[in-house]
Image 1: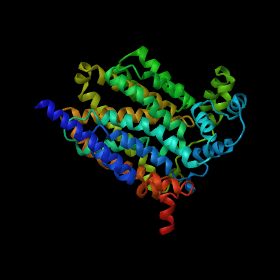
Image 2: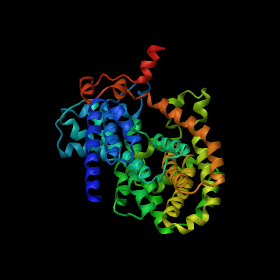
Image 3: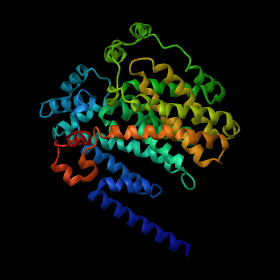
Image 4: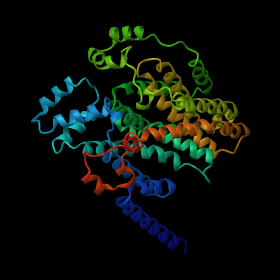
Length: 425
């Protein structure tokens, strides 16, 4: 009877997977919502991954995106289309491109041999970014026990929105974040080493990941030092800002010339990378959006350290995740005073949220955690709302209402929902 029941359950699950795939072909947006709602189903993460690829296919480069990385990526890729380039010419082009990263140029060159369509390029971006995003998100979702608490739902949304699919507008940096996390989380929490090499390969996606990989190597040698790392984490909030002039002097003295040349724009004292919506600082919700996430994370980290020390001492995997989070967050705090250095904070936030989500959901409720969750909810909700608003800058009407067939006919004619709202209001 048990065997017959298992066979029936497997057949039923396969049938559900077929239905989900058919729904995706008709209405990908609804299929993605269904995948998240049924996150424990084996087909769910692949449907979500497919939606990420579709998001790239229907990606809109709106007015606010002008000047962003994605415009430069598309222009460079389209310039390559039809150009007769052998291996020597490709190497020369790479050396003159001002980049160290290999992946983006490789994608552009190979794809440009067949087409110059922006939709094709962003489809590939969405598929690659979405694979690692879906795997990292489901790494968390698959480990949730019991009925998911409301605060955990909010925290999961934050985990997704810290580095969401629409960040393919800066494909190199933000893809590298999820690539790095892909091998890191299973190793820290479960001791699985087989994919850790993927984290190291994130350097090929964005050269700046020599920093996260360096922190990872340092952690390997230092091991779990929860008390020391917690003290370091707190200390970095009070440390003075790094002197960018001194940092540049060190780079010029010790770094290879090619690294100096290709990091010059990132180290410039006048170069501050901003998000599209940060241009309007008059809106209170834009000014407070960053703090709405960082303060609750800090509150949870401090509370977990004081209330869960005995638990972390007895559970090596949890202690590893907590220790690395504290170490990396401290390093990110220091680097945040450098131009573009604040972007590494995303890795610290993702590691911290992974730890908080699993601890809050799977551990018995503690009064301190419950009270903190109550106070943190408004800030987390503000963060979610603002980040969803950011999505409108690149989300097209086709993304929400269309399907892959319709997207093929509208290739190159996508209008962002933000631009649509501006026309209607």
